[in-house]
Length: 520
Image (cartoon, rainbow, N blue to C red; front, side, top):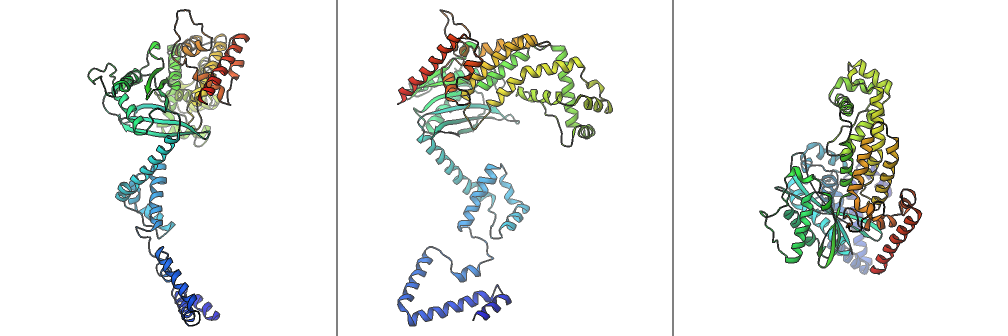
């Protein structure tokens, strides 16, 4: 029988082997029925149990080896979910990819049993299931959280469509967790009333009543107006301010306008008797500081320098001949980053990339390409390098605040105090941009005045109220709790006397201990 088995397999693996196994099974069944009836009965019972669990028989498995998975097959369902979760959602591919013959051929090469689902099936069947699963996971996370902070932003895409997003942040088992709780189109005027409605709606839909401690927004005046409306919502549970009577109506262009200093105080309102504070966005405030400083640049010389840099960058991106010559000088694939008007640090990286080019190679390239007017003189290069030195810490601080895998609130005090110390030292060193350094220093202390007052760097008059802009003790306490910073900034960068530093240290630690005892 063994010889017959080997000959059968070698002669025809596809047809003979299943027939041979069938004969063996039949012989065994007859033997069990005649000689071992109890075992035969047990065998039949086990077969019935397997059939009830949809376990395919040996014959069916071999007979259907080349058949595709049916729509109810577990592997087909798993494949469809993975297609939506990993390709459509995670990789950002369009649903139309499943209609392309090349994609279907690729899936067939991976596993011929997989049948690519239709676009409509993925859109109306699988995607809602994925969304429902994700929403349930977000709600489970937020339900288990004791305290939640929100960040809110409104922006427009390249097609001028406005969107509003609200993100929730919390700690679970000493791990920072972040999840998007609201993302929706936001057409029309961006009024304080409409923003307040969206915040209140998001809090209720995600069952966050009584859990939201802080909400971070930019410094636009319509955000300030939104928190005034939220206070009314909590008092009356209905809007008492109509759209027509909302004084906070702003067009899209003025959405990014800065509030006056006296309007930047932390706005507080109650959510189910829990006090909630609006905190200004640190990255936005820092960008406004840089904007104030750059407005004092020596206009004529720096306009000429930035104009040359911009023209050079345009040639690299728009002229194929110049691009080829540029790569021949500086290496294949080398390019220059373009500046973006909405992000000041993109201009910094753009100028820095040009300043870092080898001067002799750049001069040779420009002469060979008949662009000698783009050469920077020695004085112009010195002015550019000094400006980059002044702005370097601001660029590093901006990158630091863009982290999404670690809490950034602890870096605010060390960053601001370090920048203040750096600008004080640069005041005496600057040769070409002394006005810029002084303007940056003035803007830094004005926009973070509350923080400087709280840390006893800027004196507070007897009748002068504490400025609300970053004046909360949340910031120094957050620095204390962050192992990356602690109170090192207090020892190294704070300009105060040893007695002042010691008093601040005791005050910050005391506030933290009070918070700790109050929550226990």
